[in-house]
Image (cartoon, rainbow over all chains, first blue to last red; front, side, top):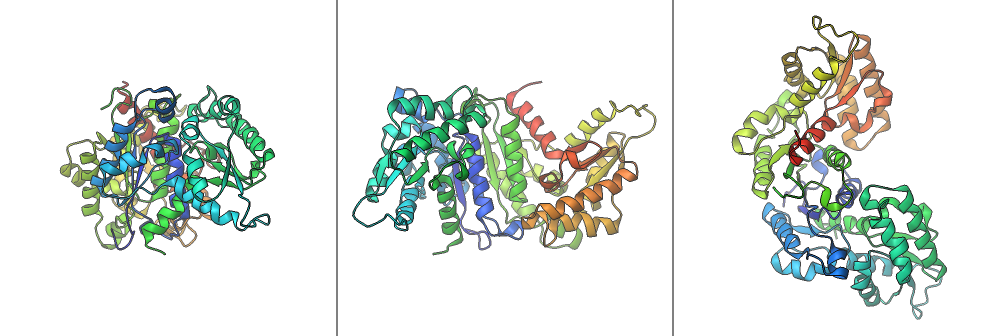
Length: 247
Length: 247
């Protein structure tokens, strides 16, 4: 803790590096600053060697857990006072990672669903009785582990997910495909994700969660007719609030 | 050292955070990658509390050296195998920081001037006898300590710097002014820096060094009629080469 910069934020990243970069940018852009010294101390451990989360969850390949724990410990030892993980799917492992460290992990999914619950109450169709449906664009790993589904239900919200076929041929193609975000492409995956969002909106979604950190790298607010909730943006603002000690 | 990702790059940053972000982006964008695991392990220590380098060098205010040493040690302990410093002025302290650690610091200024020397030989006016003049856009701290001037002379290049008055009212205003880069502005400082570059080119500069990490955040290649050398881009490419073990 530094009296000037507040609490130190740790970022357990590299999943992928572009998402880590985007989170770091969101923290910088959302911190009111007139000079360097107004910014927050951020320590980033961007280890792209962490095995793919979805490949482990869905296909039983190598577990990312050992490197996730190691990376979190590194941040704690380096002086981080809280940890953000710019990978939605990796949140499946949060309970296990938490056991390895003493500092808190700001749970991006939990915080995002709480934020949506607040926003949902402002909708004209909100009446307290019927649940507001929320569309989820995420990796198959995140969908299969029902991470967002559970947090949305906890907030008394309904969820809408793509069909299995849409999930693989549209969403996963946009993220992991040969011309996907993780391969460094932007244009083609943006069109695919827009299509996936439209399908969910047609089925009633009043919000779309950009629930994989690669999604908001290419899908923008303008491309979606309902509010697009960038989980990284929500957690970045929460982390700044905590770091600066604001209530 | 990870067989997949190569050597780990440490970034001693926060001076300012935007420059650190830009260097991290340059590393990601210049690493050939088709999936997360093709990227390099990067550890970033972005500590914006490090006292201003120019304020210390020129006006004798608090020294940044203790926090620079502490930050470099943190990176070494965390497993970094080399250190990059995305702040030109901070390079004044490199000899002292190096004494505190065992891992190498890739000297951005030295590497940049070597790169320019190679490029200068490709100019039609190069004849091996007369020295090619290089314009420097940097903070007053970097100019007064003659960091770039010395590295350019070592490479048998000539240097051109702004007059004292231009340095303060144009270059420093663009970086540190109320509507400068460090205050989060882009448009006004871009115009000021373009003006400063034109003055140097009029006096014969065949290259312009973007010798403060805030400069290339707003001044682009298109705005300058001679090659604009972004020291961060040069060092990012060199770090990738070293990390991947390429010759």
